[in-house]
Length: 374
Image (cartoon, rainbow, N blue to C red):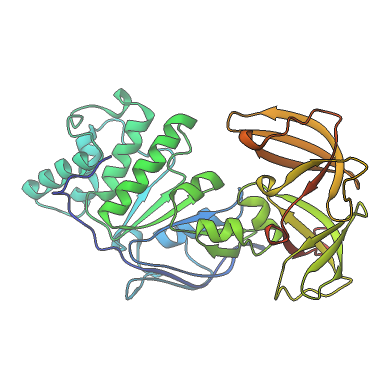
């Protein structure tokens, strides 16, 4: 999807959600969500199935009416504007192409609905197909195209009238993994060069990390955290975000000291230290410790090993994955730690080896453990 120098640049518009609520009877699908997407930004709405992310997207598009709250695009309030008057492009997971129309006919459809003159229409169609590298496919039927090509047609149709905002609802979900990974980078590159503001719904955290300027994590209709991929990965605001963005080990325990360095006694009666200044936790609180698999190190548990600070356990699984070796270590308290060690640093531990998993205090994260998580 390389974009030519002659391709037009769209002026992206901001999107602001103010205290947005959506109820379906007694079920609250979206719970007081406020969020601002900057002009030209690529923002992913990320969450598990049923989290409310698609409902938010459908309200921005106008296909769902908010129960309460406001939606603004640029300097316009649009939550009472009909979908076809919002000037928003939309790409769905299932392409939604008209099978009886040619590729060019599909791309032309939104222009015809807007009564664009024929000469201008033809120019815009050719321009949009060139954007997605399908300039020679205009006369073909959708059924003659691969899944990736059909999704490119859907994208061309969404961009053909140069909308300031592009909404995408899991557009790569129907493709196989290899093609999906290729199109992630191509789609991100196209959006960046064209300039439209993009809001992208996905449940795939890897996809969100790869493509987004920022990610909004949605869970049970609530906006849990917004930030760059690095911010969410390295500084998650909750145990849910830590577990959903990438992979993390979550270990229950109690805070026994918080003066400068936090000391946590785990459910398996082992002590670890965590640097968490300003966390607001108090000694005696039940906490959940989060640490990424790649931040753990394994040392042999020998008579001379200092077991004061670390998680002692037994290697129960070893898996070679190319660039790294993945270990599962069973620790006291019935927990299984996931540890990822770069091949160059691997000490060759085997199943049954007694080891201690350690980490730098700055690599741990502490979260309050609520009764719902207990």
